[in-house]
Amino acid sequence: MDLQLEGKRVLVTGASKGIGLAVVRAFVAEGASVVAAARRNTAELKETGAHFIPADLSTPDGPRELVEATLALDPRLDALVNNAGGGDVPDGMFEDPLSGDDDTWTNVFALNLGSAVRTTRAALPALIEAKGAVVNISSTSARDPHTAPLPYSSAKAALNAFTRGLAEAVGRAGVRVNAVTPGGTRTNIMLSPDGYLAGVAANMGIEHSALLAALPDQSGMLTGSLIDPDEIARAVVLLASPTMPSAVGSNWTVHAGSVKSA
Ligand SMILES: NC(=O)c1ccc[n+]([C@@H]2O[C@H](COP(=O)([O-])OP(=O)(O)OC[C@H]3O[C@@H](n4cnc5c(N)ncnc54)[C@H](OP(=O)(O)O)[C@@H]3O)[C@@H](O)[C@H]2O)c1
Image 1 (spheres, helix red, strand yellow):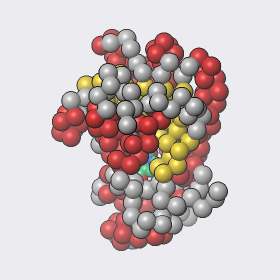
Image 2 (image 1 turned 180 degrees about the vertical axis):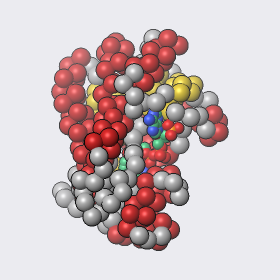
Image 3 (image 1 turned 135 degrees about the vertical axis):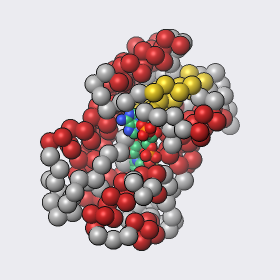
């Protein structure tokens, strides 16, 4: 299937590993020219041939500076993937869902919502010019908020509202805005001893490896295993493709059956 992405110019945030890296690889495989942003480059990202621009997207100016640097190389932009996200697990989150001070909430919102808002704001004129696409990476915790720390679930729920509202606002200008919502996906967030799941395990007082092994069943994933980041990347690339002109304001959930509502 020709997704008509050959020669298209794409900006992917949070691109150095995990889902973002898989998205970069998928666009490169389609012949797109990819600009990849994260705070630090990785050997795996270098191998893709994508153009790396360092950026801290949780800062007020980081997203705008990233877009300016991207457009200084080439003023065209056909697709933006707002993937950077995550955040720390506040101590004691299971005893007190409001655990974490204002800074916890501010930082998680800055990364998971603010980065997408600011990057999209800066990129919008170029995306309108190209009649391009935005794909935001959400989380099933936006729909099942108890499955993650409340600041993170709340920020992703806000990202869903932003996605749908922006789709309405810019759809007639020819820019398609959609979201992809992954369930538990096999990335450092889950696998790393410093990652999100390890923090959850520490909060629960159990071994990270035990929680990791139990997670697919406990979270109701009917496949019995976490999702491969390449699967999420395929959904992103398809939504960004001009062959999907009617995919507007949608939110594609790839969750292995873990979301139990219709
Ligand atoms: N894995 C899952 O189970 C899962 C499920 C649902 C949703 N998601 C969402 O999927 C997205 C990707 O998650 P992942 O699992 O692939 O995470 P990951 O493996 O930890 O990768 C996160 C990426 O974001 C970058 N990043 C983090 N903070 C950043 C910042 N302040 N500025 C710029 N880049 C930053 C990281 O690079 P640097 O650290 O070098 O900056 C890295 O490239 C996130 O939005 C996450 O919320 C993941």
